Image (cartoon, rainbow, N blue to C red; front, side, top):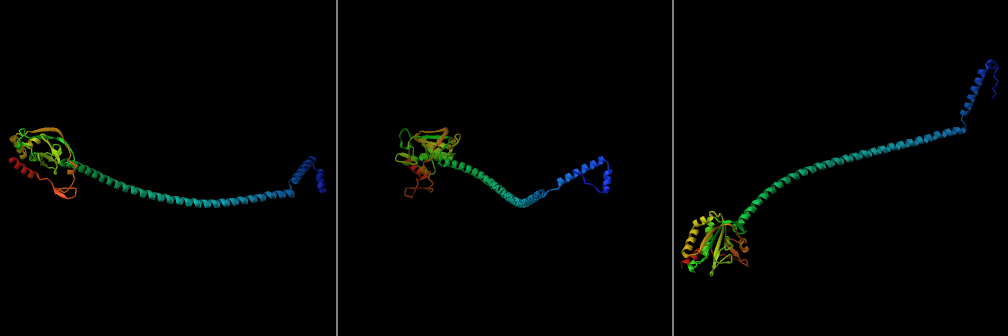
Length: 306
């Protein structure tokens, strides 16, 4: 590209200027001009450069919208979190209060259980004592069989057949009364348990007890201290009386100590708890029981004297 001709002054400077400097300046100016020409944007390029700026504004706007939305959403989420946290705290406090109330109830129930257990233990002790007393009473009254040591008295009719030497209900009653007086705790006659409602009666030539016929030789068993029961029986009035009777009429009479005796319970019909001194019949009416032992003794003594 040719250089333009400068003015007079410029021409003088241009002519007098060294060639090397002039070449260097011209080369630099041309380069600047070319670079400047390349830097000037065209209209299309300007439009192109404007478009990215618009897009950037749109992007920035969208980003701002997203940021605002995120902030609002975060605020709402935080409110929800705060609300949820408060709800959870309230629930925890309610559960803790409920647990504390349950602990109080458990403590109260434990105390009630301890009192009930103590009461139950007391009742168990009383029940055991009552059972022991009931068992002892049942054995003594004939409601239950009884086992223990004691004595057995055997008496039989006289061998000569003398009517006075026949064992009567009176004789058995004397023996039983003597055994009670000597300290016997249970008595039976030929396996029939003697109870407050029992009685020995004479039916013709047969003795009966608890509505059961007895047959000689008659065995009277008694539970008691076998070391002293026989001696005490001999010391009673009844013992002396039966000893005299058997000797006078030649009636076999024997007393022996037994290490183990078992006396059965009385018949069921004698164990019914009816009015004392009466016995109910099938129609529900009451009739007197058998005569007392004293009446029997008086009648027997009169018969034997005759």
